[in-house]
Image (cartoon, rainbow, N blue to C red; front, side):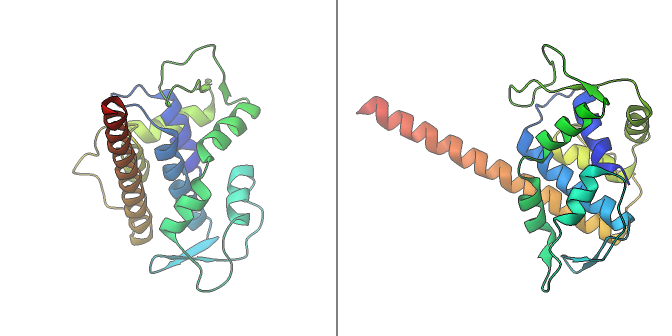
Length: 201
């Protein structure tokens, strides 16, 4: 477990050539939570649907909230639906919780762009060292999530393949981020068209 926390810490800690948006990161965090819930055997996958199981407390308030949010009735929830539902505002929720736990501090200004929002930065801790180690060693799941949300530019081609369940989750995250980017592009085109019409009026 800990993939979602590691992704958040890496996102706040890493310099990147591309700005990381809250929307992309939130989708990635929701996917990372599924990975963590699979590891804790709180969910299994039936095709693309998340089948929930009864589980003891996970000793992580963020992951406990994720487990509580699972759909527990058939036909259960597709992974992609979970990403959009659970992901709404999730990056801010993680930032706030990590700050409350003393794992990050909020500076007066941040050089890491999250669409102009000033985010906390990680303090030296065992949690930060674990996250940075996973990034430095190109741990496949974290590396793929980080690339999907824009924390890194690419994933090495020789990475070991994750198991089938993790692969399904990672593919859903990539698809959701791609869809969100397409929505942003369409809105930008529509805004430009409206501006042109307005100027020509």
